[in-house]
Image (cartoon, rainbow, N blue to C red; front, side):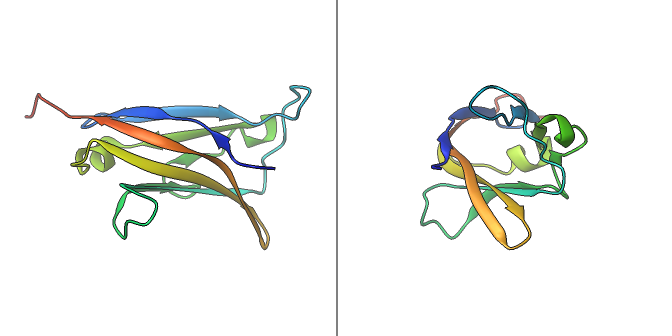
Length: 116
């Protein structure tokens, strides 16, 4: 199965939260317990520099994984470090030795005006 496409916007200097629900073709929730997830964002797919990254151990909440819910939180600290206007990302799911890209897309960054 190909990765689903999902584009989103990040307000630089703010925390961004993205709740995801994994379901089968009939809409029944898939149990994500036991999986790990990792997301990286770069300016282009071939860029060496990672703009931000989150994982099951840092920024991806797996507490509702048994009901299909996984919540991605990109912290204010991580978004504040981004100095570009656009990027690309993907989200990979791993169980054992199998890693699958499940979501990919574009990210637009809205620059922060208020600084304290």
